[in-house]
Amino acid sequence: MSPGEAGSRTSAVSDLLSIGQFSTLCRLSQKALRLYDERGLLRPAHVDRDTGYRRYSLSQAVEAERIRILRSLEVPLDEIGELLRAGKETARALIQRHRSRLAARLTEYDRMIAALDGLSEATLTSYAIRERQLAPQQVLSAGWNGPLGELGPAAGAAFTELVQHLKRAGASVTGPPMAIYDLEDGFREEAIAVEWCPPVDRPLSGAGRVSGRELAGGQAACTLNAGPFDSVGPAYAALFAWVEEAGRQRAGQAREVYLVGPRQTDDPRQFRTEVQLPLR
Image (cartoon, rainbow, N blue to C red):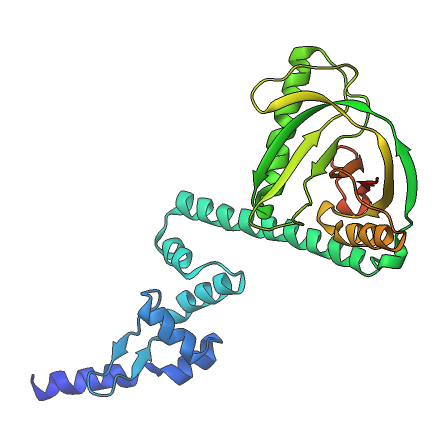
């Protein structure tokens, strides 16, 4: 290398910004800049072979700002790389995918907030327990056994099957839908047994996992839970405490009757579920 070439290169490098200067300019930490270098998102304009010092050009500030904005919106690093390289259509699809992800998270946060609102008043003493006589009734049933975390989607699929069977049979629903839980071993996250049952106007035959039967009547301890379906735990605790204090015994499986649910309102805080524990 000639002296002129060396001097020209030294001059060019000296015009670049140190990682500290570039970090201040772009409002990105030096740790983040090193990570973006490692991930191939924002390579330094020059890296000293001997010291490893990174230097950046002013023209890279625009790209750094794009990355900073995308990270502030919680776009994953892998997708940022795709966005930076993508054409308009692909970029639009990637942005829509992240938008859907954020919307789903917002829905989940709304559910969690509703559950928290319910917890603020969900003490054992806030549940009024009453004992009453349940009448026998004909139901159409779809059973399921699986992880507690999959209960919601499984319920949706079961009720779809039940509605289709009812239409084929030309039968009518006579009251709010219910779920019957086997609580002999409590609510086990790894496996829970449940039947979803709409009450119907006459005895029905079944097909596949759908079956018709008469649900027995009898005495039951009952209470009302206000709020999302998954906030029902304290209602069960209140019922169990009442049964023990009253010296009674449970007989049969617990029932949840969905008096107000998604068909009546989009607001889970407005859901109303009657929880019933049959008694001896």
